Image (cartoon, rainbow over all chains, first blue to last red; front, side, top):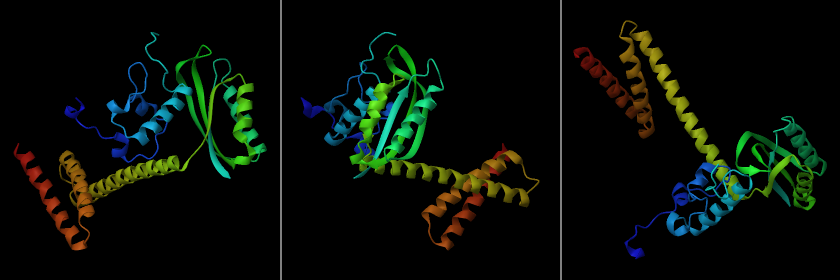
Amino acid sequence: MLRGKKKRICRFCENGDVFIDFREEKRLVRFLTEQGKIVPRRTSGNCAQHQRQLAQAIKRARHLALIPFVSDIPR
Amino acid sequence: MEKLYCSIFVVDISQNPEEVETVSSRIQQLIEDHGGIVKKINRWGKRRLAYPIQKKTHGYYVEIEFTANSRLNIPYTLEQEYRMNDRVLRYLTYVVDKKELIQRAKKAGEKAKIEARAAEIKAAAEARAAEEKKTEPAAEETPETQASVAEAKADQEAQKTESSKDRVNAPVTATEDKPSTEKKTKKEE
């Protein structure tokens, strides 16, 4: 089933990023689902190293209220 | 071991906007009293919180970078202060590692490069415009300025691609021919 899928390349590797900054919340939002969950590696195509860094960055940003924990609450 | 720390905190300014100054100066004082050196203070300003904290929707973000010996245990003292102060909504103190520094340097380098390139293009265009004004004061204004900008760009590209001086001269003359043909076509129209 997975064979037919196109292989994705890690966007951070492509960019040559060494560190993912939690201050750039606009970049982080791309790796969140509509609900605000972290997108899994199989969908985003990130490499293990960057996925770990990304998770760290997202958690820090959530703590500082830069990005939501859950975003399906009507305001 | 000497380490670089970064501390970010969110201050509630819904009641008193001067609270930011008192809190940040207090934190600075604490760091210095305990033997740390404040390197940088970055005020992000008032921002909307992604979710309400203590029923507040906005907060003022302040970022302080400082170096200290890890034995001094400054993050711990800072945390105690943050906890005691009820104006501080959120705080985060962490050690800045090598990777982040590399990334910052890279970003700064890219920014500088872009700015330098923009400045070069602008300067070249201005120089061209000045030269052309001297040589042909009676020429049409609008196509000239457009041509000068195009010429400047072409010039720069030529300079980048070709290294030897002889080669640089050749494309310049070639680019000078182009605008004239453009002018002709415009006049014909």
